[in-house]
Image (cartoon, rainbow, N blue to C red):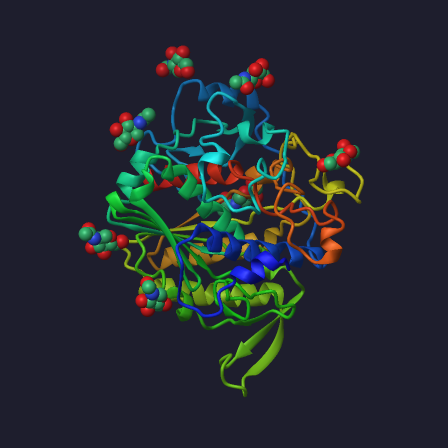
Length: 434
Ligand SMILES: *[C@@H]1O[C@H](CO)[C@@H](O)[C@H](O)[C@H]1NC(C)=O
Ligand SMILES: *[C@@H]1O[C@H](CO)[C@@H](O)[C@H](O)[C@H]1NC(C)=O
Ligand SMILES: *[C@@H]1O[C@H](CO)[C@@H](O)[C@H](O)[C@H]1NC(C)=O
Ligand SMILES: *[C@@H]1O[C@H](CO)[C@@H](O)[C@H](O)[C@H]1NC(C)=O
Ligand SMILES: *[C@@H]1O[C@H](CO)[C@@H](O)[C@H](O)[C@H]1NC(C)=O
Ligand SMILES: *[C@@H]1O[C@H](CO)[C@@H](O)[C@H](O)[C@H]1NC(C)=O
Ligand SMILES: *[C@@H]1O[C@H](CO)[C@@H](O)[C@H](O)[C@H]1NC(C)=O
């Protein structure tokens, strides 16, 4: 770990200074954890997934519908297709990436000081900037353009909270960047308190938070600063330590995926503080299911249905294995400059079984009168092998990692501006739809 990070890691908890420097440091460590984990992941775990080819051969005919200028926010009829994903009869998650250097990117990297060094690809030497210029074009309609003023108006006197792992953090940074250009420096602030990072737009009394809870439930990886722990332990029944920080939010955006990716996790019955707890190795899918059950039960009992809108981001795909898209297995996302064009491309590291568990939890919550919208960004993002930081980021790993940056390229997180801006445009569309 670099001296820089050690130096700024706070010794005591509580409110850390508002300097962006410490914020950056916090997140660097967070980001690093996922990357580090990924280098030791289990290669045999995922099942290769072959999505069915599109049933609809008349793709071009469907694209023509987009020229009718229907936008996803038109109309109020919501067709509840199985699994959701449909607004006004348009599936926002089926479509393609279109090169569009007129309207993208939506902001410049250098204009958003909140972009962490782990995802500031241009700053760290990326020369090919094509990755910033792709627009997601749903097949049957157009996405509305993200309007920062409208978003801030919508959040007036409200609190939007992203909670989950560093991919969710990546999306939170994107959201802050998307809105912050509209706000003069004196009228915005950023601070960290424990696992909570808070951006405030003073004039609007609008808060956009990120809360670190990589496994949703309590775990031994909950410390934003010190979570590089090889043996993962979760308290599958305990979420209140985290949930009390976000239960009152007006809009809640969850995710949790990458930290689960090992064959088994240790589940603790008891507490971390008291030594006589019972530990048991539990198969990953089973422990994920247990955690989702705890999460659902918490929401059912504690969420104010009249107030809080709930979203769950599906898994963010990684591009660590170039053989997935026909390149030598020794390569990864490094040097990739174009999206994957093969329709329905699905990488081996995206586990559809986990997605189904999330869907099942959401369906079950629906029967209890609680609506959680799944934003199915996995397929969309699968195509974007070109959009990860790879080696264009701050290097802060071990000696071994520093000496071999290409091998340890970050093919997990996303450069900003980039793919998470599109996720947020989808979120924006859903927020404005109801
Ligand atoms: C749709 O938009 C195009 C340009 O974007 C315009 O030329 C066309 O007239 C519009 N069609 C309708 C039906 O509004
Ligand atoms: C999400 O998208 C994937 C791939 O397009 C699909 O297989 C899955 O059924 C979708 N899930 C939902 C809930 O829509
Ligand atoms: C946008 O892309 C087109 C085609 O690649 C290129 O000809 C044009 O110069 C680009 N415009 C800008 C502003 O980068
Ligand atoms: C953005 O939203 C604001 C507030 O709703 C509105 O006044 C403005 O016209 C919108 N801008 C665009 C370009 O649509
Ligand atoms: C600011 O927003 C919070 C919710 O985030 C609310 O509780 C508070 O009353 C608001 N304050 C003012 C002055 O509107
Ligand atoms: C930090 O968060 C704790 C709750 O976790 C709260 O009690 C405390 O007041 C917060 N500190 C500041 C300065 O906001
Ligand atoms: C990949 O990129 C590195 C620098 O980022 C460069 O030195 C190398 O030649 C590239 N390799 C290929 C095969 O393009």
